[in-house]
Each structure stands twice: as C-alpha cells, then as structure tokens.
Image 1 (spheres, rainbow, N blue to C red):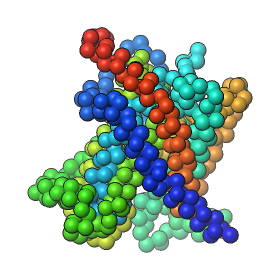
Image 2 (spheres, rainbow, N blue to C red; image 1 turned 90 degrees about the horizontal axis):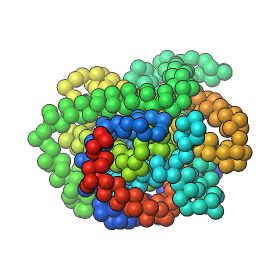
Image 3 (cartoon, rainbow, N blue to C red; image 1 turned 120 degrees about the vertical axis):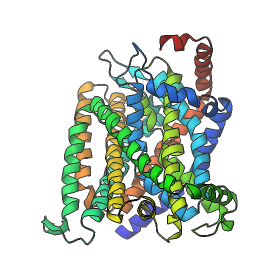
Length: 481
C-alpha cells in the first residue's frame, strides 16, 4: 500500500511541476517585464545600490538588507550547489542558459512581489509587521478572494514544516557530514532498538538545538544570524569557485560556447548528457525556478518586514536578490563544473560539484571535500531558518483570519515552532525522497495563488513604479539618503 501511495505522490509531483506551471511562471515574468519596460535591466544598478543603503525613519522590523538576507537564507541553499549540477548533468551545458533566461524573467516577478509585499502589508501598534502574498491578495484583490489568500498560507505553512524547510535540509547536512567524517559507515549507535549512523544522530541533535536557539528569538534573531551567515557563506563559496575559474581561465571561453551551443542544439555538444532540446529547456528552467523562487511567493513574506517607506525600493532589493542567487552564485557553480569537465564523468547531483572542487581547487581531495561540505552545511542551515520564518507568518495569518485573537495566534505559533524543531531533529532518519515530493507539491500549490495575484495586481505594480521613478528623476528620494 505504501509503495502505491509513494508512486501516486511522485506522479502528482511530476504533474504539478510539469510544463503548465513552468510556462505560467515564465508567462507572468514576461508580462511583468514588458509592462515594467524591463525594469530588471534599466534599474539593476540602482537595485544593487539600494541593498546597502538604509532609509531613515522608515517603519518596519528589520533593515532592507536584513530582509534580503532572510530571503537569501532560504533561496541560496543546496539548490545552488546540487540543483545546478543536476540541471547540467541531465540537460547538458545548455541548461545553464535556460536557467539564466528563467532568472531574467523571474527578476521582474521578484520585483513585483517585493513591491506588493510592502504596499499591502499591515503594521500594528506594537510595530509588528505582517505581509506577503496572503495580504496583497486580501487587500489588493479584495476580501472575496479570502479563499485564495488562505490557500497560499496553508500551503506555505505545509511546505516549511513537511520538507523543504526541515527534513530535506537537515538530511542534506547529515549526508554531507557523514560522507566527510564517516564514509564507510563505521560509527554506529543504537537508538530505540535501531542502529543509526553516529554522525546522523549528532547532526540531528546539534542542528535542532542550533535552529531552536535562533528560531526562539523570532525575526530579529533570524535576520541577525542571516545577516552574518549569508554574506559569510556566499563569500566563502564564491571565493572557492573563483579560484577554480582563475586556475582554469583558458577554459572559460570554451565553456561559454558549450552553454550557448547546447542551449539550442544540445546534440551538437560533445560529452555529457546533452539530451533533447526539450529536456535541456525543462531542466534549466525548473532548476532556475527552484533556485531563486521567483513567482513562488515565499520571498515577499520576508520583504514585507523591511524598514522602508517605498514599496518600489524594496521591490528593487528583492530583484537584486534573484540576480545574486542565480546570475552570480549559480553561474559560478555552473562554470566551475564546465571548465573542470566534471559533467563528463557520468556523475549525478552533488557528486558533480564535488568532482569540480577536487579537480579545480589547488588542494588535496580531502581538503576540497571539506570546503564543499562546509558550504553545504551552512547553505542548508540558513534555509532551515528562512523557511521557519515563512511558515510562522503563514500560520499567523491563518490564525488572525479564523480566530481574530492574538492568544490563539501565539499558541499556534508556539506549536508550529515546536513541530518545526522536532522535524529537524528526526529529519536524518526519514525517507527524503517522499518528503521532497511532498515539499515540491506544496511549493507548486503555493505558486498558483501568488501568480494569479501578480497578474491581477500588475496595474498597481506599474503605477507604483511610475510614481517611484518620477520621484527618482526629481531627486526627492536621493536627497534623503
């Protein structure tokens, strides 16, 4: 019976994450790009400057940079290491081009999400901020769409708790540490009458304690830890991949040629799993969407908490997040794999990136594995923190809508937080494949209400953008900086 259930869930996962949803995400991104006159090109320099500048006297719980780091803590994760490798291994080098294409259109979607999150957020007397797709659906589209906003919140809470924020991430941490410290599986302990890897047991315990300590401090602590870890882990990873590219600089032109040729004629690219054009496009687009989460509706939950008076400004910062995640981090991963030829070794998943690190870094194989393991651990841990915040805000919205009382909301949040930490603790001992399928389904179900809202509220996004750009031209905003 369980095998039939597993197959049914896997089939449903393939159906919801098939071409219809992918094309819908791209179509919404293309529509917003056209309506906003390709704001991702025109305003990218301004967006990057906004990341580092603080607004004085703006309402919100964290700085714009803190909100970005909270968002990046969830988006910059194992997908940047494993997802890119999977796309190239299964779809060929050309998949990286389509990953870029999805991110380019996704930048417009991320801009709209960040803008709407601030425009329609609520701030109570205590300064507590709540916003995101559920609020811009409710306040932007009207109360009659309560079922749409409620659906998003329900699916978002499920996605955080049942996989993408907990079990899959801690399992990734345990697997990475086990492969580094105990690849032969010699260290075993008895737990409840069953033999388990000692590394997995200690990983579960320590990760749950660390996550619980951060999560207990709420958004301020999550944001503070993210502001410390995200730049640190991203810088360390980019330093490692930069060394690989510098030591293989002469191979970069050939790698770029592989990407461009493989994007349209994958069969013409020698070596690797070129596959068909359809597979190349599908793998690149799907991995791009999973990596930067543009259109899924998760990032605007963090963006809503930013201390800003300008909805469009936070949209710019959110857009910069997609640029950093995909055009910098994912690109460095992809080029490192291609210049070292790791994609031609018949490997899959993280083994592809690991081979690139061993081949490209001027270190011993053991040291190279250690660098990649450290990156995987930090990436996965910050994803646990970011998705807890997303899940808690979804639960809080559901409680406010259905009970109206803060007491019920506090109790529900405490219960969700406890379940979340418990899921982290048991994660390494559960079936990851099934959990990934369930998490993917929840992500897809989250995306549908959000994409409907982005399309319906595109007029409000354009109007707010025009007002913001008008003030920019008049230098009213720049003078306040």
